[in-house]
Image (cartoon, rainbow, N blue to C red; front, top):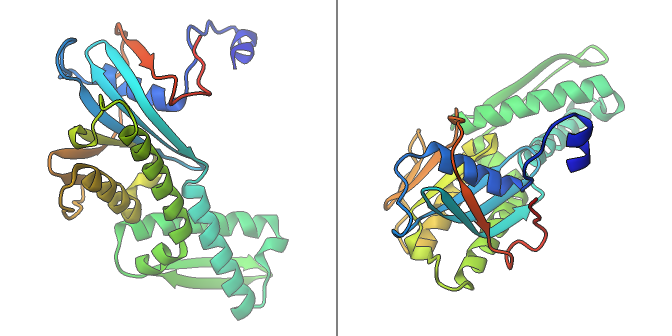
Amino acid sequence: MLAAAKLAGLNCLRLFNETAAVALAYGIYKQDLPAEGEPPRRVVFVDVGHSQTQMSACSIVKGKMTVEATATKRVGGRDLDLLLFDHFAAEFKTTKKINVTTSARATIRLEAECEKLKKLMSANITPCPLNIECLLDDTDVSGKMAREEFEALGAGVFDQINACAADLLAQLKAGDEKFKLADIDCLETVGGSVRIPAIKALLTEMICLAKAGDLKPIGDAGTTVRGVRVRILTDLVCKVSNQSMCQVSRWLPNLRTY
């Protein structure tokens, strides 16, 4: 990465991983952080992206951030898209006698429609349609799926995200008690896949169990549980700010900073 930056003529001042970058962006954006010497704000960051899920727990005060623990799984929204693709490819092979995988163009079109269907199911509880004209050999195809069926289909993916969350909480629980699970102030989410209701519910339950609280219904704008806020980080204000970052090496064996 440093060599690539040098070749591009860029002066790379520091290199650190994505979980630390998300937390640093949060610290720059927030104006109501505790002052140094006061109890820090304890935040869990969850990034469920296209192909990877990353979580980190940080203690933040003005001008300083400490990464206490991290967890990563190579799973994301792309895996759910592929599950939908395989489901409908098999269905059309049976009902329409066409094999979508034999055509690159048909494969791309079906993958795109599966991604759209995934987003529709995140916003609607009623069955959502999938319609493609002339997908292969001038054959029109159609199908539909309800959110409950989608969640059953993606159970393995959700289990992997849950395992990532469990890994993060286990690290915090085994720590030196500076970051107590009951003291988690908020959960900040990043990435388009966190909009999937099943993932929202999973993250809510994760924090509720950590804080020994009761699960409350998920609202349209996010998830709220006993003082824990779940918010999507968007339109971050980028500005120059004096920030220092401390990374706990025992939880970050593969992280190097320069």
